[in-house]
Length: 128
Length: 371
Image (cartoon, rainbow over all chains, first blue to last red; front, side, top):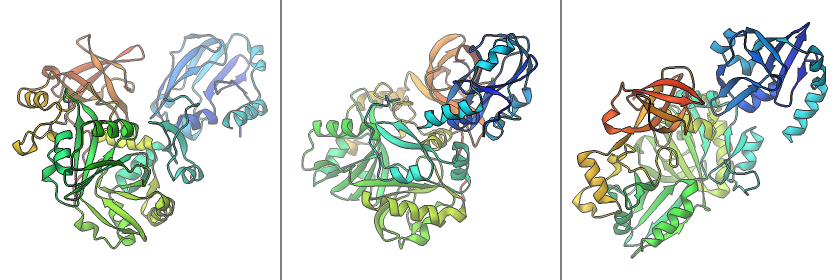
């Protein structure tokens, strides 16, 4: 269910690292909790992000949720197609619904986040 | 939101909702289904086919006895004398300032027998208030524990329900009801709802609710019926600009301000009731402020409680606001000074620190086309 090629946070974001480029999105568990997503706000390219700092907002019909960056770094790309079609977050949260790409300051720190198995266990516990 | 430690009440359909995969949330002291397959899909099912809602949390207060009509005339805002047997009426229980203690539907079952359907969170308050008004020649009884209430709503509601009941539904007009059976269960079938669509609200004894729910779901499946939660109920009623008690109106907003002057009767036959003088003056001379609909023209969803500005000056706050799934726009309601409430008026809404433009639009936002 949760791809093994990335790491996960307790706030239900994922980050996939390629060199020092980290691609960030939210997990399937997060989109299910939110329900039908209808609005997305993302930062501009060039924004400096802190680890666990907010980088945007996602809204479903019923709920508003802040987005927290799993990593510190600088935003190098924004998925503007997703802003126009935020419902993709419900249909493909781990694929087409990537949100931003970040030049990660400390790629080694990503290894400290949960891997897929640990995250699966974490949301399994939270779901109870 | 209540804390999770509060003991929440459950409707007789609680286990069925769980079984159907509903997401359950606290609402007005009850644990209720907010959505099943997804809010937008449920909302669209009600606009285009049908949806089935469990609204058993609503309260039912019976007023019975030879003095029932006179008593109800004294405590409600609308003219109860206009009702015939089998007819229902939207009304309110006003306080001395002409603001609602609750909004209610009054059902006339017989000349001496009425039923008030009240909001779940107000059952105890309304019951206490009615008793404190000194009913004479009648008795007020809280029958909320006896009834379950299912709302079957949408353009295909009638064709789904008709094969299950001997009652000729074409003979049950809007805001009328009939006593009869549905699939063998004794029921009151009322042509009312809170979605802006045609539909029925079906009162049955709590012990019959589960069997009836399952039967309706099965009977409607091929016609596009979906179970629908309180989430869709809220977006549907907002598109139809129906007020939600506790959000768009409460004991500080007069009925006229809330746009409910049409349920305030000033007929001589109606007589006096709490807040009548205030409401009469406001109906004749206008109220200082008015509940209006707006559409967000910038980016963002205005939600309940967000501050509203006129020319940069604080003007109030959003009472209801949401993405509207059928209209695919971001809409809401807010109070504005009456002099600045015309359609087209520009307002600004503070969406979590961003100043977002919106404008007043005519309501209802959505009105179904008559067949």
